[in-house]
Image (cartoon, rainbow, N blue to C red; front, side, top):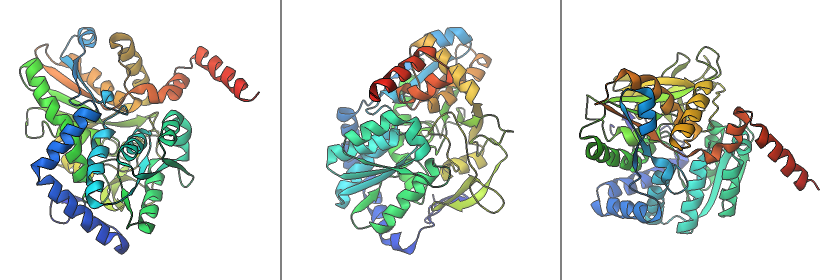
Length: 409
């Protein structure tokens, strides 16, 4: 990253003047924390006692035997407290908020995992908390909304635009502009204006640091490939950083192919042909936008991958060909989820399952003495309504109808 917050051609900090002083304060606090080994140790200790770090690297023996190629390992970020990698970034930013002396945090969320992690952090540290969530996502991620509210957070359904993640981000920025003195915006992914992309990636790098040691201990050498789903890109940046300097390791980001890359109903920025360079939400990256720069509507079966932009760091790594990008369709995701549940007894989040899709395609092409790692960024229980609907499960329908009748008595 250069002094202006750019990663090659991407990034920067395109912010209103009213936020300039707030960002300077954040940059100073982040720089001091990054240069202080005691801060990182405090962070690691917190994640070890409050969450589930180090998260395990699970050998998927049944899937390995099924595909007959590389040994398949799964990095279990789903076992983090709150059920996803989001806790890593949120707890790190929470420690920074304490040092900055602010008393209120706000956040955006799509799949609800970042919102839930932020609400959890706010409860632990005693911060007031407001979470902005697109109205569409509120409906398909109701369990997470319930828990956020029970932990004391105010959840605000955003009704603008497509009523999904990008609109929640816009609303959170509006809040921040009017409450800069008391409030910190806990940005949830490796996007937005500098220093957020680098800072979020730094906290998430704990995933890759652990995974690198674990695969060498388990397999005796580095993996051939590492797979991660990519929405904004924080879980991918997290695990990729453990192997960034190992040129022999193929790093693969998997985007939401939705109904297909030719359908217009997807969220593939770096794999498809529909994204173009642009500046929005405080930074420059590849956005799904029309010729006038208006953001296009996106689609994914997963609530966390339907974002119009992507991390500027990943855009740089894509341009430099260090990270390869693929896409998985909704149909492929449901098939991979079904197989993983039945063969390993593991339920990945719909977001994470995109990475499983591409790994399953490529594992048979490798030899048995090679290994691959799939980053399971979250657990699938949050997706129960979407998954049950996608599987057209009759018993689930009966359950929902029966409960609805009970509530309406």
